[in-house]
Length: 189
Image (cartoon, rainbow, N blue to C red):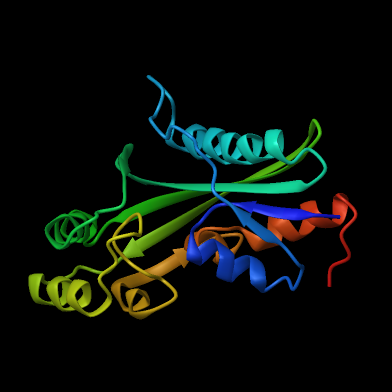
């Protein structure tokens, strides 16, 4: 069965490689603008479904994986910072606080839809300006929602992580995805 990952994220690609299934990558063209009054978890779920759906229309015989992550601080979304100053500002705002990361995954093929949503809570240590700047300069997490890489040095910024699936924080909830792939007929492990 053909398997496609509707994402060009290297983080999602590396996570999916852990399952040791052959897959191809496709770039979905999806407008990621939030809808009015859309909750942050609903945004993540909608975008995961939209990404999978965009590729499934082009490849109806394939199973397509779509995923999206939306970070939330005090009910407000946190995007990818894109640059140093924005990353420093995000980490400063998150210092000593809890941030929720909603990671959705959708497995879709010819009208068959399997979906899951993982919410990971990250409790940040109280960080000094020097710690934040040293971290941002060391890892340059400009392409990561929340301005950190939990799989790298970013782990030193936290007091605790609460999650059903540790891979979800990196961008693809593998426990849920493995379950969905088994339901779809893939043999794992």
